[in-house]
Image 1 (tube, rainbow, N blue to C red):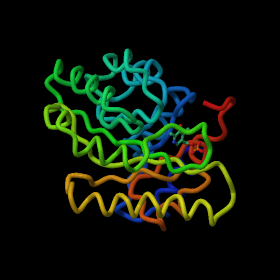
Image 2: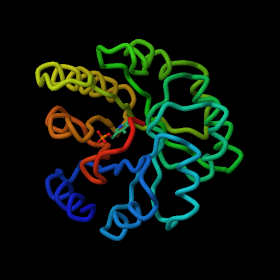
Image 3: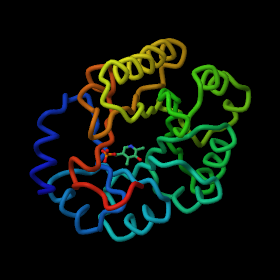
Image 4: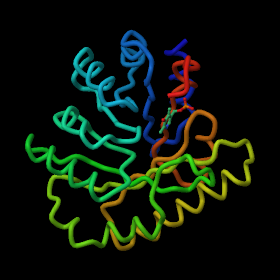
Length: 219
Ligand SMILES: *Cc1c(COP(=O)(O)O)cnc(C)c1O
């Protein structure tokens, strides 16, 4: 099923859109199946779980951390993580920079914007994002690269609301790019809303259940 789902989704994605296969809670055998079907980019939301999977699986996999970050655990993934999607403070960026430096690496990060109306979603306001990008502190962080923005829309089937949230982030991202041309990634869209997200300007989608099947618990 995984192979079939993956091919189906991949064939429907425009070429400029990167597919992150969200494998959180799923066993290593499932990830191996997706790998054998050609998938190389995987997303996890718990650092410990990602480390275990990284160690067990082929080393040409690109691992993305998509969950909310616990600063004290960044060190466990600093030697291999490829992109961290959910960064929402300068303090976290400083910690990522510190751990990346220990391994002589540059770690790509996305700043998480709060676009959902729900209070439960993490993220920065657009003003806070601009403040981070223009700060004095950021210029000293040589081992991180802020390569774009990430957003999660409200959990709703209201297409108008989703459209509005995705568009507002895309417009903000486009405007920021004029000042910060190194921003190249806009990560938005999950199983339920990725087609709309792409229509509204996303170039990276994070898809879990439509590839691997439903999860047994909300992670
Ligand atoms: C779990 C998760 C996804 C994938 O969700 P699906 O609905 O299963 O596609 C995407 N993004 C984040 C941040 C997640 O935690």
